[in-house]
Image 1: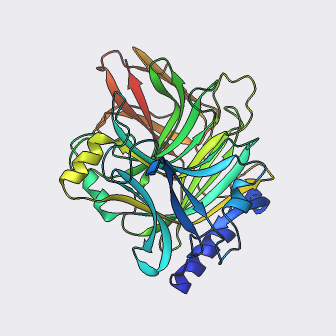
Image 2 (image 1 turned 180 degrees about the vertical axis):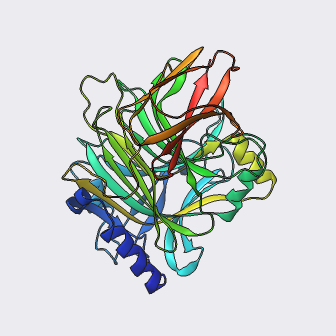
Image 3 (image 1 turned 60 degrees about the horizontal axis):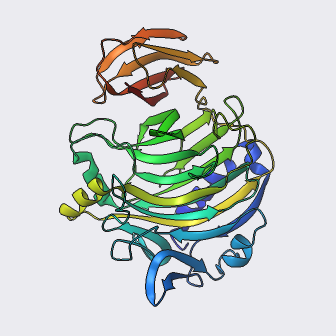
Length: 404
């Protein structure tokens, strides 16, 4: 919590005065800056530390909130844990550590050393804070400060695209339950060439027989991922169908400038779920990616870590409505997905001025000045493509589409 007073004032004003109107009517459930009275304990099983979890305890003296009494014991929250899933602290680790930019401040640090989930087809590394077994969480939000280690910039040199390097995730519902659905915030590299930029990507996915499939997906190419500096991420979630579901994410940078990365109206639950009943689990803080990326960074002595601070979680009492000057992302319908010989693109709104189909290196392949449109794509090879949407006012968003 303790950092430069001027900067904190700017961030507070930005996140308070510029919040959406409905966010003014919130029931704050919890707030903590991981201050010294907070402690982190690794779980033990049969005398061996950290088989699966860590947890936070104590009262944050700056906010007065207690990790057990005010978070774990909330009637709508099942429990809070830090999940490693597998492995031990030589592979992944959560710790309370000094702020990399202000040693007087305490932060929560996640670090991946090696992949810890190995008994799967594609090994991966995962560490996440989770609010699990929740009840009737249908409209809520959270705000947290994030610092990504500058070494993550090495991913720009990775020879290939990066589609999942996950920082946050909402589950509605979990794998193993009926109608699994997730929304994931990722660092992505949409172009394969070395030296390509890193952006934020967001997708909503269902779990089918062939794995996770996109219901919707966007990449914000207006804001490169800030590295080595603090940013504030503010998320709002409303459960609903294609017309009423809402997921928004704003970034407040180190200068207090506000960037609306995503403001999506679309399904926020499985489209086939006959009785959606709220988010069962979500990860407001997460570090999750493939063993390939973890090993590549380790081979170049690059640290793969993230720091989190000033976590706040609330339950919305009104439906969230954006007041940002940036137009929200319209509900875009692309079908079939995956596409084959033709691709149909339609929208219920009128703010889109151009659509372009790009390859994964960003080269334009086809374009249309308005919607709806049907593209003849029979000549394109199987693979992954980008659909770029240009809105009135110049804002752009990108959706990932596979062709089979």
